Amino acid sequence: MSDAPAIGDPFPQFTLETPDGGTVQLSDFAGQKLVLFFYPKDNTPGCTTEAKDFTSLKGDFDAAGTALLGISKDSAKKHQNFIAKHELTTPLATDAEEGGLSDALGIWTEKQNYGRTYMGMVRTTYLIDASGKLARIWNKVKVKGHAAEVLEAARAL
Image 1: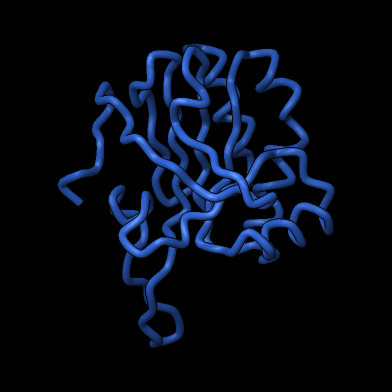
Image 2 (image 1 turned 180 degrees about the horizontal axis):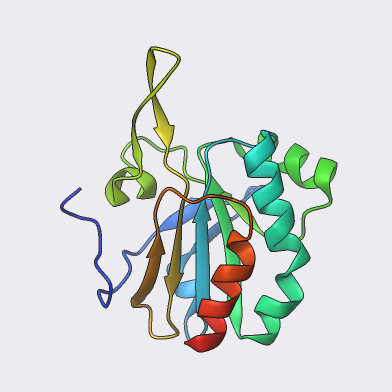
């Protein structure tokens, strides 16, 4: 958890797999603002709503000079199915690697549900400014209204 960046720190460099088999990295977004939204799992109710909300506002994010990237531990193939099923236009990436970005950020962590303990993603969103510095963090995100709140913060940067 000590590796997790604080507001004002440069966001850690990353390279993640995209659904088409390519890669995406922080440097791809140089000179523009970036929203990274980490979510637990494709095709679950909250995650589907969140991805659809960001997709519906993508044009507004584009107009605000802000790129979007949704990230989970799901495979590239699962992301392809998720995108097709829900007509998502928001880019997704896979952080399936052990010790990957979500591990470094401290948001891939032990969770409990119905008495069962397991590893899972804490729904977290990061807003990175055009110089690559962390501008804002939303921890333990509640999905309703979240994408619109992030858009307002991106416009204010």
